[in-house]
Amino acid sequence: MSEVKFYYGDNVPLEMHKVRIVQKLNLVPIERRLEAINEAGNNTFLLKNSDVFMDMLTDSGVNAMSDKQLAAMMQADDSYAGSETFTKLENKIQEIFGTKYFLPAHQGRACENILSQVLVKPGTIVPMNYHFTTTKAHIVLNGGIVEEIFIDEALRIKSDNSFKGNLDIEKLKELIKTHGAEKIAFVRLEAGTNLIGGQPFSLENMEEVRKVCDEFGLLIVLDASLLADNLYFIKQREERCKNMSIREITRAMADLSDVIYFSARKLGCARGGGICTNNEEVYMKIRELIPLYEGFLTYGGMSVREMEAITVGLDETMDEYMINQGPQFIAYMVDELQKKGVPVVTPAGGLGCHINAMEFLSHLPQTLYPAGALASALYLVSGIRGMERGTLSEQRDENGNEPLAHMELLRLALPRRVFTLSQVKYAVDRIAWLYENRELIGGLKFVEEPKILRFFFGKLSTVSDWQTKLVAKFRQDFGDSL
Image (cartoon, rainbow, N blue to C red; front, side, top):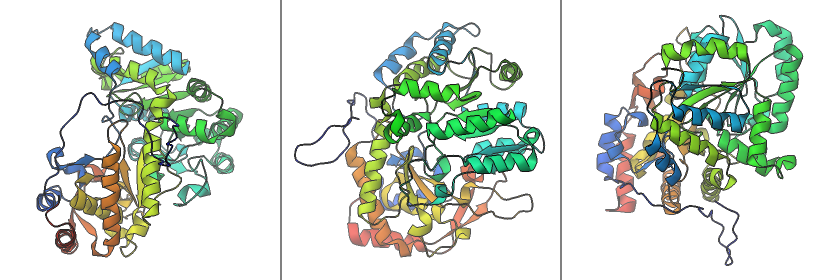
């Protein structure tokens, strides 16, 4: 994507790549979609891809690879130990992040598991700018307590704050004062707060967090899974960073971190992950767990072919005209939905377009899972698979109570370099129609509810026959159209 002006006034993002490999899509009739969503227990995770037209569930492991990545996969060294492929990846990590130590893992949550086991002790606290579902689960499983100390603006759906993902510095100081530095396991910063709309934090905010951590001897752990989007926003929105290169911003962030971990299913556009650090003490503790949970130290549960692709993908992430494609497509989609009155999170963040289900379905209480209901309804009328990011994505407390999420969002991920502009326009059209017919949408209730990460494989049913009525209205308005 690039800043290219159209002479006759169009304002659309321009792809800076061409498509050379394609995959056929299916758009099954709405009657089949009704069967499919009920077979899946109204859980979009449980839909079969053969019933999905546009898969906007996630950007994890589904980003398009470049021709250079695909070519690199053919030259992998598949040695169990001492692989040259690992050495390439390790060297690239050291080049980009400036870290001495690198440990591979099969994906981001594997890193979270190991870091939590090493750094979290029962009763310790992990302050963060916002939690992610698996991160919180691992910390809690190891006896830790998650404290979210986001800025007040973070929870405002409509905002012009460029960095809603910033950590509140005064809240951090107060937390340390109240509990003592010895009770803080580490401070976690998520580059692109997933659950509140992919909102970034600024480099300035990270520097302020670093000062506080240095004062009290605390570690900063950076979740860099969505780093690419955060880098783009820093360069675009933070005045002093506009003349810095993406590599310079990356190194500045890395230098402020004690430990960096990432899912390469997002950062690097392949399937894997890793932990990197300059802290030898932390490295030695983590190293012991890699062979136990992941694999040997030079593959860590990853295919060497994927490792070759990650090496190239990390290099490509340093290209502004590669990493800006996602944010620009998302901004376009957000802007088009706003024009049609659809409530969305602003400013447009990374990862995807986020619809405010609380306002979209204002007639539904949170206890009926409005974001989940909206995900089900959108699939029904469009074949688009999105992801609920709200109360359904949380889990009950130790007493069985249902904590209500801060936000009820339907996240429509835009994997990098995957969808075309006409497909985005189709999504906007169906969402806008659904908004006009939103009163037809009813709630959901659990019929199978796992105790941990229930949103992945729990099943729900509708509380009324609202889906049948929605199908009837669709046929009335669209006729024989898919």
